[in-house]
Amino acid sequence: MSPNNSSPYQGGVGGGSFVSANPSTPPRLPLVRGGSGSVDPTLLSKTANRLRLQVIEMVARGKSCHIGSCLSAMDLLVCCYATAPGLVAQRWTDPDRDHFLLSKGHAAAALYTVLAEFGYYPAERLQEYLRDGSPFIGHTNVHGIPGVEFSTGSLGHGLPVANGLALAAKRVGNSSRAFVVLSEGDCEEGSTWEAALFAAHHTLDNLVALVDHNKIQNYGNVADVL
Image (cartoon, rainbow, N blue to C red; front, side, top):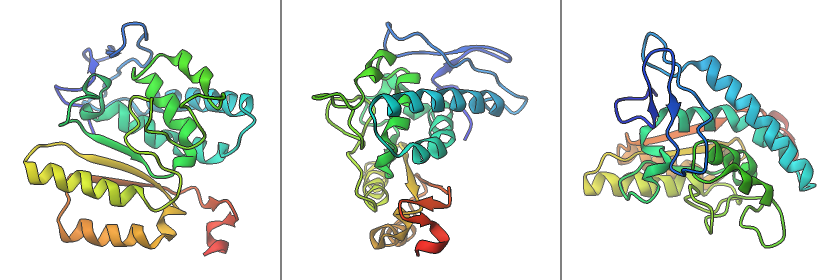
């Protein structure tokens, strides 16, 4: 995926910055374009690593878990939000925006940090993670958090819902896409395979499904569990 003229980034070769939807949220991810016009992968990697540290601090402060799932998904999340113009924060209320679903909802802390990084809300809100009464709970929560499309946690739901979003977009003739990040545990759910068959049958070429292949799940190595 490469940014185009409607990218959330502004700037030319060698520099630029992300345009935040929230004036109180300073832009933090500079744009560095390579010869092909894509975002510099080294910059994306550095950003992902910085956000990984932020996740570790959040999870430690909340005395929680699922750190591994958050860390392994971070590159995928940063890449999606850095390169997909339809995921820019300014379009959050646009019905024709791109959609992003984190099917592996237990990696919520990773998504929360990425959404803050890309201007959906001030980074200070991450201090609310796992506090009593906060919407920033341990699994993705659609209530009260800009950028979260769907509450997830129970595996196998992300791809079916993304299918619906992608099919609806095609039916009404808009160009929005549906991105979904799945875990390997998601891929052990029958509903995921039914959704894959559905996507192929309906030629959902506006659906982008990404599997976080970290080779491990709650009960051990994937190769040993299934």
